[in-house]
Amino acid sequence: MSYNGGVNSTEKLLDTIRGKGAGDEKKEKSRLPKVSQQPLPMKRGGKKALTMGVFIEHSHVSLVLTRGAGGSGDTKDLVKWAYVPVPDELDMEHERFASFLKSTIGDFLAGHGKAAVWTLINSKNLKLRNIVIPDLPPSKLPNAAFWGLKKEVDLDPDNDIFDFHILGSVQSNGVKKKNVIAFSGLKNEIKMLTQLFSKAGYPLAGITAAPFALQNFMGSDRLKPEAGPEILVNVARYHTEITCFHRSKVQLVRSIRTGSHSLVEELLDTSSDPEVKSWDILEILSSSLGRESSLFAAMEPSAERLVGKVLRSGDYCSNNYASNEPVHQYLFFGETDNCQPFMAYAADQTQTEVKRFNPFEKNPGLTLSTRFPEGAGERTGIIPALGAALSTRTETPNFLNTYVQRDNQAKYRKMNAIILGLCLITLLGFGGCWWWQDSVYQAELAEKNQIDARIAKYVPKVSEETLNETLKQAGERSQAIKAYASDYLPLAVINELCSLTPDVISLVSLESDFKQELPDSVKKSGKANKARRSVLLTGIVRVDYTALESTLTGYVITLGDSPVFGEIMLLNKTLESIEEENLLKFTADMEIL
Image 1 (cartoon, rainbow, N blue to C red):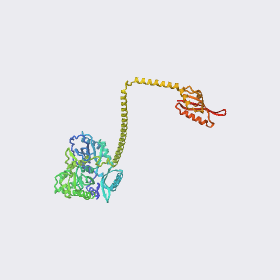
Image 2 (tube, one colour; image 1 turned 135 degrees about the vertical axis):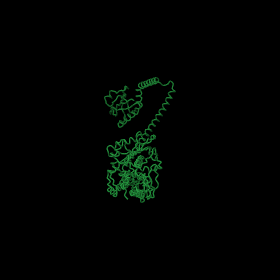
Image 3 (cartoon, rainbow, N blue to C red; image 1 turned 45 degrees about the vertical axis):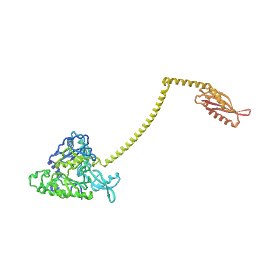
Image 4 (tube, helix red, strand yellow; image 1 turned 135 degrees about the horizontal axis):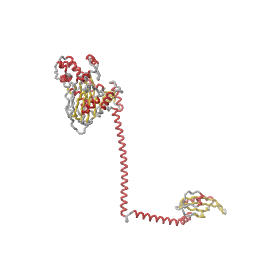
């Protein structure tokens, strides 16, 4: 069995026979009753977040406002709703539709502040499949899900926005695999909705599809699902959407070209009662038709076709997505809500429970601040809009936040975590440096305090005058020591030379004025480059000829080790022979320290 949102050959043939054209919906739009529920005063609820769901149909715009944090397990409050007719001459592509939408939302939110706005795409443009793909690393799952969906539907990456959500793990022939919901929507439609709401001055927080909006009712905190799948049927004017849920998740979506118009079309054509022919579709379906009346008998063939498709969809979902678990219940909402004979007929065709869908029945996740609409036409638009108003960015599939954006956000979060970690490490480093410097400061401060305490014990106390006097006395003592050293320096030099000069060396002359300047002979030699205090020593070495040089070298080294002398320079040395005795005459410049 193939499940898609297209028109099958039988339906095309029926449309041709009936002469139904593409403009029939617009003609029907002008005959729809101008139903509008005025927004009720909002009960103030502090600073809780507001979320608005907007569902745009060809004849009406449905708006629902909820209040609450919207997280998992949080209770949301239905604040108000509105079912606003669209003027006959307008549609979504009209240039003045953005102005109409702006005024409609502005009146709806008047005085209530900002709200996160969610809207729905046309379900006929939704391509959705429940598929099983290999258990791959996270980076490869998007590609596997894309090709898995492409095998099932005609998917064009240039025209479709693709996304997927993982439902869980399954075992196939002993191999672990992933069960995912893969889906796509038209890029042009999503772009058009984004631009439309931006022009209206209310940028969108999210764009989802009706099956995902209805899925918000099926969560663990809203409608508690039983073991088997649940089939949710929305009977609209010209089509019916069938959504299969199992374990609170969408498993199958089917759209068929049989709606409330098809149910009453044959009745209107065959009835001879002029009053019946003048009735509106909703008037017929909400009238007190008897189960055995001739009016319902005229509707029964169409009802049989519609209910049969619904039941076959339920069987297909049960066999393929719920391990053959029987359907738990069939839930109907839309323009057949108030048609008791139709609901009774649907219940007669199956042993499964059939009832009207009421999203507030046994629903702890939602409370009311206003009454819920009673009209079937209103509920057709308000229920999907309410589902959109229960959406959250973390739980609801969002065409503005696909896996591409989620991956980028995960990368940004990882990058931010790394940056935060580096900042923390840097702060810890600065904290360690501050602690170390503070400990050093405290130690220095403690030492200063000890010194101050010792100083405080001295008498007289230290002052600037006493410090200056002490420095003056120290300077005088230093000058006296220098004068004493200068007076006895020649004697110290002679004594040091006498004690260090060996017997084999005779000192001939000692020349120095013991001032801080060079003698003329040293200046002329060019071997000294700075002024210094020195002594010019002349001597003769008397030893064996072979030991002259070594004896002189040892003598110079001995003088250099003296604390009295510094740098020693040999200015000249000559070898002389007197009475057949070899002598080494030398002249040395010795720095006086």
